[in-house]
Length: 216
Image (cartoon, rainbow, N blue to C red; front, side, top):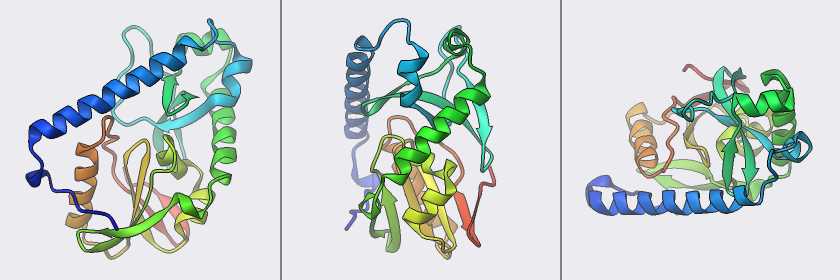
């Protein structure tokens, strides 16, 4: 069902152009959405749009520290205002204007995530093969990788059996059977990361005996 994409078969210049186009489209979408935001952003408007996002290698805007915290299963997260398929990240000055602590923002964002995740149906996950291995992939939302922060919903969608779950980008989760050789997982995940405008570059998660753990 899935075609295995080989970097060796794809010219580097083609990848650069495609990724550049994806970034331009994302920035256009974000700019259109931010033009429609109220200024300054009131808490009442922001509250239902807040979501936790895996931090990955995100850099703080110049002079504006992003609001960060650590959430189960132990990974760092930032917080974004959902604007269609883009996010405006929450920084410390905005949080201060809202008079909200990182913990308060976390609680609201987590509740929003749980509500959105509960609305996803089985069609959010698709089965197929990559490199001769059965995998399940979800790219249902721009915050799909955040499902690892709501383990019950993750298990509902991907199953409770032992498995490894990779998050190559904010919008992508890939589930591998527990017996998949690590080099195969690494090859597939790196391929997805290379084709994502904002790769997360984090280690895979493991679902073992119904418990989600992250060795990172």
